[in-house]
Length: 140
Image 1: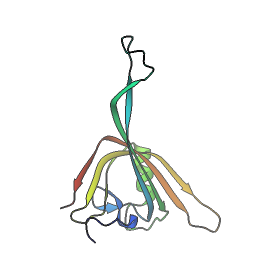
Image 2: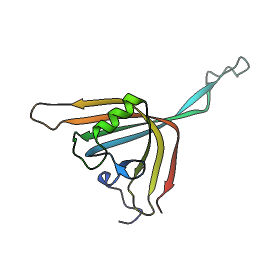
Image 3: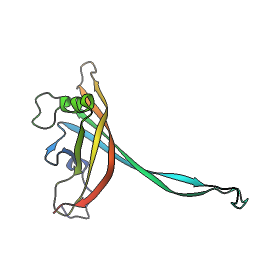
């Protein structure tokens, strides 16, 4: 696959400690935002237009996976324990192919949910609040 090709979502995975993927994952969403702060003083021109300037950045990650207690990758109980114990996890979103970007960050699991529909797959979802910066690099 050439570096300029559209990446298949199946190839991008979330890894704990850079080595072990979240088991049986079906989707992941990394959301990075920047707050804007309004600049308005009594000396501002009376134009009716507010001025803005960049403020703080924040990020969250959500992961959806099929529920498996026998996966050789990160199992649901590891995510639950991270939430229960307030453990920070080192996570990376990557395709693990040379020349492609990766995004790494430290995050706390802030939500953990199991969905158990009748005659369907049991799934687990987890939401992480990222603590500190999201770092972007290129796989060697």
